[in-house]
Image (cartoon, rainbow, N blue to C red; front, side, top):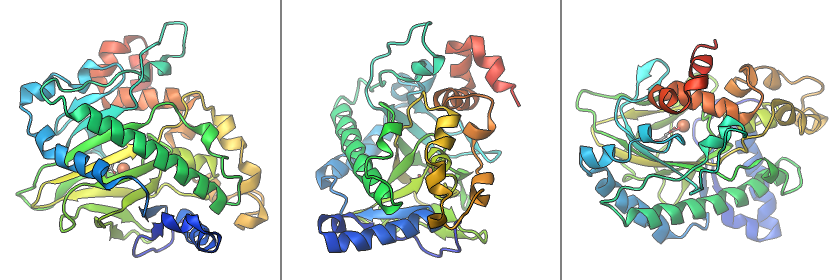
Length: 353
Ligand SMILES: O=C(O)CCC(=O)C(=O)O
Ligand SMILES: [Fe+2]
């Protein structure tokens, strides 16, 4: 069971969970999407329309703030890697991504002290633009709704994989991350909005495509190497598996590679990354559900091929916890923040391969 040659992305109607007969159907479709595609849409998801509309309408105003207003909340100010980063700040698959973004997270206090693991410092307050005070309640409400949706969804995922509904909840973090992303229009033909990647920062991703449906860009890679369009279907979120979840399911549920190509129209999107608890260790991640996912039911027998070729910085890397792996990734991608706040470990993380 690995990502098949899917040619479109399944839509899972979550309202079917309300009656026993339709729930059976939902769980069957969900299981197929989980084990064969790794990408899906959810419709009838229960997040109030106004919550989504308020956020979608805020995006143009937010990205129209002046350079000085954006720099005032620069990610470079934050030991928690929260804030604004401009176009060109990131590279994926060796090429510069053409997008600018504001990164927020569940609002938490920074209570890190030197006695605690360094990765606990990822936790902390957001930076809110002073000149756009209406933004904060809009983003906070959205994060809170998506937190609820993502937990409800995890119950269904567990059931679809023949596990007790709350199986996956104990792996969740107190911090979930939200990115507000703007891809400027590309006047010189298609360009890399974000290069091919698997989501590494969370458990599951819930993506709102926040531009009109005719504006395309997101694509997922199937097994034969074709890029399949993931268009914006109004009323849905795109949901995809992150690398942490791939590890916990022994590769039965794959994190599917995806990318964004920018075209002649600007595009906005909002990925919500459901967080994995920072103290999750490799042995716990690999061992807890191994027996279940190598059982006959998953057609695998003893050692899973899927399990063997999981491509994960967490499993391959030198560090034992999810939190430390995340911190390393963040320091490597934002080296200015790394030098400023994590001087003692900067060299260790940046030159460890
Ligand atoms: O903007 C999108 O549609 C997808 C963004 C994405 O894949 C990411 O930020 O991980
Ligand atoms: Fe992604």
